[in-house]
Length: 243
Image 1 (cartoon, rainbow, N blue to C red):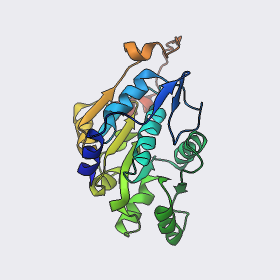
Image 2 (cartoon, helix red, strand yellow):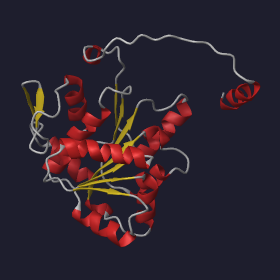
Image 3 (cartoon, helix red, strand yellow):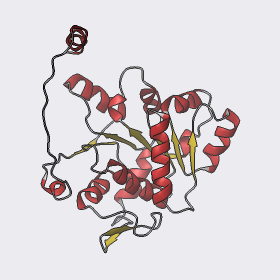
């Protein structure tokens, strides 16, 4: 199924969105709601239909990149989109953002364990875009509530958590569609980074810093003041364990 999507995209000549008057135009995105930033559209074009990881500092628009990929996936009718985030407040935040930016015809739902399983099964069937915490999705995969064969894209927010026995790992093992991981940092150690990449099945990485030429023009100068403090013995002990 994922391979079909890759082939479908590779045979097209252009992306479905247009740019003009400083805004992005797409059939599934509300007019004049998303400002055009070249690096975001470039990244979206490079990763659509692929297993990818986007690494961007906080505030540089990982969500907008996800929006572009979601809009393209739904526009081309590749399947449903599943968007997971590690906490209920983050899930709510993403749901509200996409509710503001996508046209009303896009059928969206937000799930958690507090929604009865029978209702979740119906929402899976009725929705184009599904937001949830990973544990809820993992449980629903185990109980055969989620139609995995209908997924066209799986998005993992805070993708650096895709390690060990975290629920992200279980979902990645079961989906058969492109995976998009989003993170501000994939990890501080090579072993962890490689584990994240392996679980996400990444074949494309798009990373930017605030100093990259295509990003710098959109970044405001930040004044940073470093204040050194004396750690308590308890905090020193914790730091030694982490190190």
